[in-house]
Length: 283
Image (cartoon, rainbow, N blue to C red; front, side, top):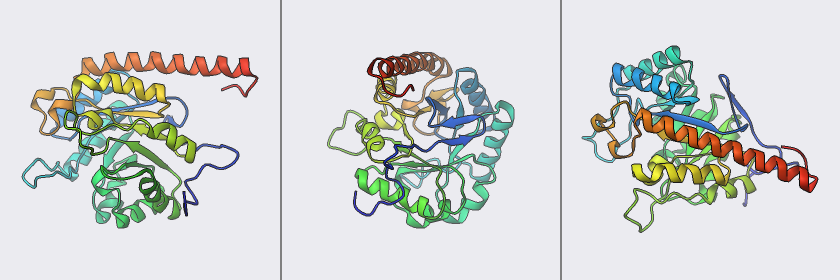
């Protein structure tokens, strides 16, 4: 992969593991749930409780929302970050939230456990350098028109600043297909694991934009070997100020988590048994 020095998988096959609160990313499947945007105190805290009850391990929510139209809901900013901090205090769930401006990184770090770099900012190199200086875990989403090599080069920017805590996130790319919001490229899971030591999450909510497809693509992501899932959940999706069509209700989220967990355990057991039969290392 050319001049990639820090993201590439070493000969010993050692993979990066990232501890965030009580959650270890890179060991088993991590389920992250929460709304597209932080809209109000009631919505945020109620949804956070639902994510916790439903089996989620982290809570996601956008306090800053880069939108295609300048007239769409842009998030609550600092007020939103404070609400996320309260959600963490109430539930114990680590917080994942997006940072969109290099000038905001230092103070967003005061509230977030994981800094998300959105698809539109994947190649914002000033922002990548800034989050690289923090040491804080970074969730780097793939740009909607980006190749695997371009994506990994962006991760390289973060690692080159001394921050080894990078999580890649496939959230779908733009193709000529119009039925789905994006084309979710699940081939990235084995490709990333073949080339790098970094963990990879899948975002089937943005990847499809269709509620009816989220369950099947989540299960497919688990079968492909994803390290985590990023799922949009809202206590009342019909009232959501953004991405209402792709947000799960708390009941839908809880039911999906049960299926995901069952499949994940089955996959782990199957790999373990296969390893014994073939005489390989136990997993």
